[in-house]
Amino acid sequence: MATKQRLPAVERRALIEQAAARLFARHGYEATTVEDVCAAAGVSKPMLYRHFQSKQDLCMRLMERRRDELAAAPLGTFLDTRGTVEQRLQAMIDAWFEHVAQHPDSSRLLFQDITGDAALKELQLELRRRQRAADVAMMREFGPPLAEEELEPLGEIIRSSLTGLALWWLQRPEVPRTVVVSAMLRMLRGLLGER
Image (tube, rainbow, N blue to C red; front, side, top):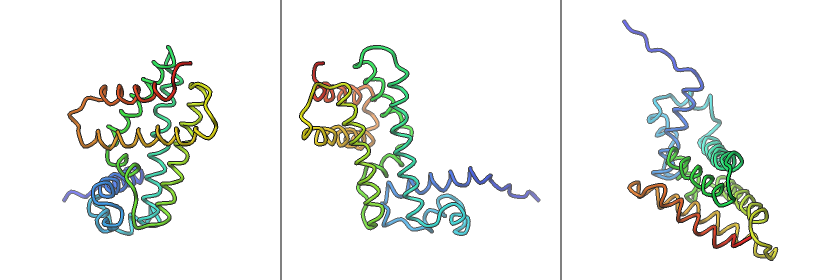
């Protein structure tokens, strides 16, 4: 009689995270139960609770990790790419959208508004604030001199354009990544202007 081999803890955790990201992205945080996640991941509730304190903890960790990975992918590309600022920005935007394509469910989870949980909504607002701050830093570095009071709204334009375009693109997989990268680069050119 064959015995079922236990998965290493890291693989079990990854299965839980993948199932949760898919369910949260497709059905929403509120509508997804711990039982749903366990069934989709093929684990028991006690097993899920060995890795995460609660459904909320699971969702928070998913959002934080995806945000960190999404921020790191293009930044590394920008720093490693040679060429003009525009060529480096294009490589950075391409890396960002490539990462979105590789992780569609957790990207949707990160970009779509969370409802039904105040702590998760607050975390989402904080993650958006951090993204806005990174975009403001980019404008200070590569854009023309701008009025201080315009920087945060312009940072929000970049942040919301990236996430909105990513959600639009995830619904249209037939659109080549080069098209969305080109569209985003065109928008950034307008914001950053000539140096």
